[in-house]
Length: 218
Image 1 (cartoon, rainbow, N blue to C red):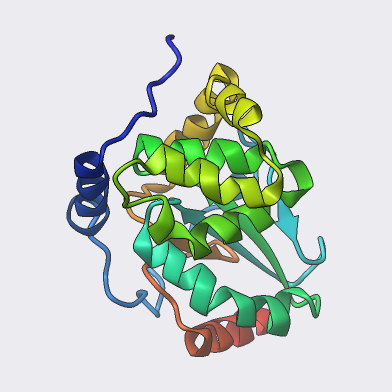
Image 2 (cartoon, rainbow, N blue to C red; image 1 turned 45 degrees about the vertical axis):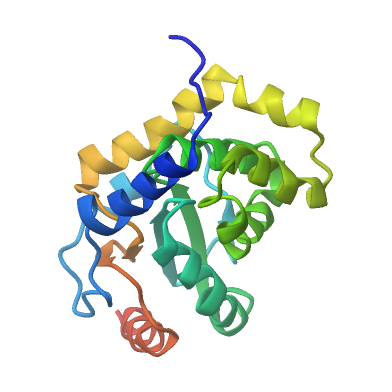
């Protein structure tokens, strides 16, 4: 398989946005009652890439998020909701949180590849890229924007280009997405599984409070 071409024009970037908002239509708010359960054993089975886990391994509630780096709804969650979720639940040992790759387009795949190459700092890079999404995902030259943002993490141009030529990493990021689509029927982002129950779309911290309280009792 040839190395993918990540050169994406501004027009393609706009197509990405249309894909996220139309082709992968998202509700304005999550389906608060959930939309079915999946096998927790299957959900937590080994993937093509190892999970990066935040929080205590034995926390009573596990949240798995499938996200795309170019999804504006995902960026909004990580900017506006995740900090409170981390402070109130992850850091206190009540929730274990796992973000998994579900790229909706090649640019999102590239961003996830670069985040994975950060090792233990992967989630910090993901948070940075979501916070700076408008400065790289929807600009005239998105790869230049992506490289510019990542310079703040110490990633130079040589390492940047080498990462995007990593065919095995490219395939594994997409394998995580493809397994999620096949096994769990995911077709939009963000999609959350909370102790195996599926919630699609954005979730407010107030909604998380209610869901986590309910799951903590069961």
